[in-house]
Amino acid sequence: MRKKVAHPDVSLLRYGIRELVELAQKLQALIPGFRFIGENIGDPVAKGWKVPPFMKRILADALEHDDAAFAYTHSRGNIQTRKWVAEYVRRHCPASRLDFEDVLFFNGLGSAIAVLYQMMAPGARVLQPLPGYPAHISMERFFARSECIGYRTDPERDWAPDMADMERLVAEHPEAAAILLINPNNPTGAVYSRETLEAVVRLAERHHLMLISDEVYFRMVFNGSAHVHLIELAAGRVPLIVLRGVSKDVPWPGGRCGWMEFHNTDMDPDFRDFADSLRKRMLVEVCATTLPQIVVPRIYDHPEFAAWLDSNNRELEAASNRIAALLGSTRGLSVRPIHGAFYMLPVFKEGVLNSRQSLPIAHAPARDFIERAVSAPGFPPDKRFAFYLLASTGICVVPATDFESPLPGFRVTTLDRDPDRREKTYTALSRAVEQYLASA
Image (cartoon, rainbow, N blue to C red; front, side, top):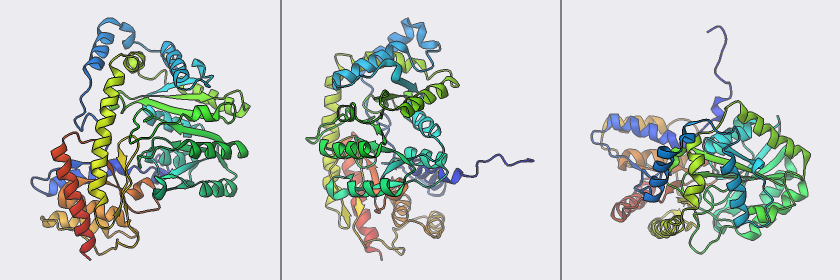
């Protein structure tokens, strides 16, 4: 071609969750009978979570009787559904003054996240939690054309944000315009306390920062925790964007339906302009997919939804606590029970990893392939473990460094509904950790 067309900053787009799947595909070609055990991707349907019959009936009814499900909808999202969102938010947060015109629908939160960072002013940065979700980190740094600015979270305090570190970053980076919170958290399963959230609001208020709160898992909270709505704390104090979606509390990740809520738009003209720019950006996409938007209110307001969600949360609590017990008794690991969503991030204790450790890989071609891969300069030690684990056992976990974690470890999902299979998988994982650490 007479001119390069590939973007020069594509290296800033990194998404290790899916990269491990590509590695597994290569291993399947090298190892006869290779069995993939995917503890890496948070798809409840793939892990055996049945779509509830009432939800299937709602979808079938919409397709059978509502031809509008096949048409375009409003560019910002179905008007009746946006009105429902505003009313639904007020049910949970009486302080909310959200208007339906301040709700914007996207084809899933992945799309919303990309557009959010794309429309930030050049040079404006968003502080990211570390470890953090790769879609947020990758998109923010890609459009900023620079590595992320991330605040630490503390595993000894159930992965709460390190407020001193956040304060330091705000002082050192005048380009910081916003702080991102993911609550409940992916990848750690943390649920932030009222005190923590109030401290973040005070910091944003003091430094005139916008807050972005990814709350896609807000209904999935357990182990004695409760979700505190940032809307209540931020009301009349700081500009706030809340991200929600249909993905996990409703087992429909393939539906790709997410939305933004712009709160406190009357506080700052620049924030109001930013919200307007996002609305204009969505005009060029015509609209997000219509069918999910039409059925969202019918699903969440269905009389069977609350009982269904409660049952699933109790099952998630039991499964995650058992996994935490199994991995928590593993030599060399530090594990915290989770309080929300279905992610857990065990951390390797300081000094236990080195570049000589390995696990047995029965087939020579696969062993040679892994040894070459992990010998790359600067290869992270927790990624080295994840590669050997996958080739040796078929168990796929995501290294913590793929979430930009300052601490080595790995993330698992706690979704497997089969208790016998789950016990077998995590017992094998625990043994593999100890075998790996003892190998050198």
